[in-house]
Image 1 (cartoon, rainbow, N blue to C red):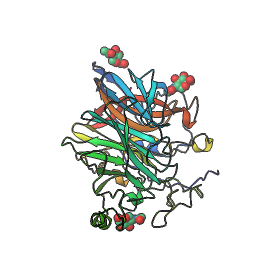
Image 2: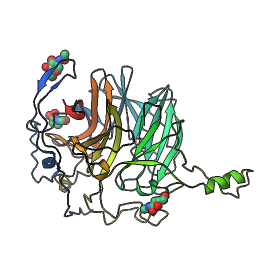
Image 3: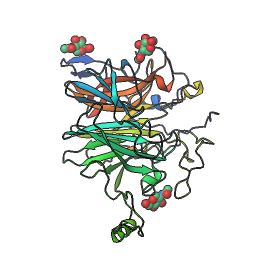
Amino acid sequence: MAVLFALFFFVSMALSARIRPYFTNFNGTEYFREEVLPAVSDVLSPSPTPSPSGSASGSRFPDTHATDFRIHDPNIILVGDTYYAYSVGPGILIHESSSMEGPWTQTGTVLNGNSVIQKGDNKSPWAPNTIQIGDTFYCYYSVSNSGCRDSAIGVATSSSPGPGGWTDHGMIIQSGTGEGSDIAPLNTSNTIDPNVFVDFDGTAYLVFGSFWSGLWEVELNDDFISVASFPHEVQDSDADDGKEGQSAAAATQPASLSASHLGAEPGKVWRSRKSNKNAKKVDKNGSPVCGDPTGGHPIEGGFLYYHAPYYYMWFSWGRCCEFKDPAMRDTGKEYRIRVGRSEDVKGPFVDKAGIDLVDGGGETVYGTNGDVFAPGGQGVLTDAFGDVLFYHYLNRSVSYDFSDARLGYNRLEYIDGWPVAVY
Ligand SMILES: *[C@@H]1O[C@H](CO)[C@@H](O)[C@H](O)[C@H]1NC(C)=O
Ligand SMILES: *[C@@H]1O[C@H](CO)[C@@H](O)[C@H](O)[C@H]1NC(C)=O
Ligand SMILES: *[C@@H]1O[C@H](CO)[C@@H](O)[C@H](O)[C@H]1NC(C)=O
């Protein structure tokens, strides 16, 4: 497939430039740490000659904690003394370890077979997100096909985080095709990359989105497996099941889904592909569901986390994959981990310059450095020492192959309320 080199226009952001030296105490000992950081805009600008020096010295980012755990879009939770990682693979893979560095052992899967959702890659659901609410573990997952927004988010539950005992409840929301997919904002978004966050009042929010109109947040019902007003399985009003009145009412109910827009990439960061194997698939309005005709708007992998006194909206910006083609590597458009913050769970989330994430704002917390290339698909967890930022990355001394992505992680410090990756 021909690579389209666009004359990208990139709105370079006038973001803050340097972070001063600071104290860190993540391992219980306060010590001084010094970093010289280039301006964020230098990093965001396409760089024709990145230096794959193999060393992160002089980089604005600290080294990663490298692991040999092959994973994409890692989702890791700590339950007791055990770390559980959930990731894409047949039935959603579960790995366990007694530490972040590993060794990580696959202990089984969430689903015994395909997801009950009849859409996309339901054999190997993408980008799972598992959380514990009360005594129950909820594993949110997505089914889709690459480059298409014909997707859905589903959920499975279990009384334990490991394999066995999971019940698949199927779809929560969907986009592209199918019931409810014409409701805003599902008609302009891609329902993948689920992330569920439970606020202090017990309300659960589902964050989702990838490319197109970006990142969105909807409130879940108290069952944590459904969304208010989303018309599931609306029956024909002439169905002969004795529920005509009810069905007619449901069918005429104004379709609505109250959603907060959390982030977007308004820029056309790359051109749309001329063709896509599924290009003929269209939504109810006749718009293509595979390939965005307005170009690539690379924002995805939203992850909402709280660290007093702010809510942080983490996301991945840029191109995640396709780096086997050397021409795709040094464009300055590869994945990086960015964040915005808010005092409200529903946003607006802004960066240091006050730019709203829906206007393209976002602080870059971790990006390409040394061997580390295109880190993203991130999440955050808290252990006894504080917050840990985890993600996948490619080791550019080894391979640019999608399947060679590894788990990496860094401790987080908060400087003036802004997260900074430290080693
Ligand atoms: C904390 O980390 C620093 C830097 O890596 C190290 O010098 C120090 O020994 C560590 N302290 C403990 C208690 O692990
Ligand atoms: C990358 O791979 C090289 C060669 O195996 C290894 O020495 C280095 O530690 C790796 N770096 C990272 C960040 O994984
Ligand atoms: C999405 O749906 C809303 C109504 O729910 C409508 O106003 C809007 O025009 C639709 N957008 C597209 C792109 O179809």
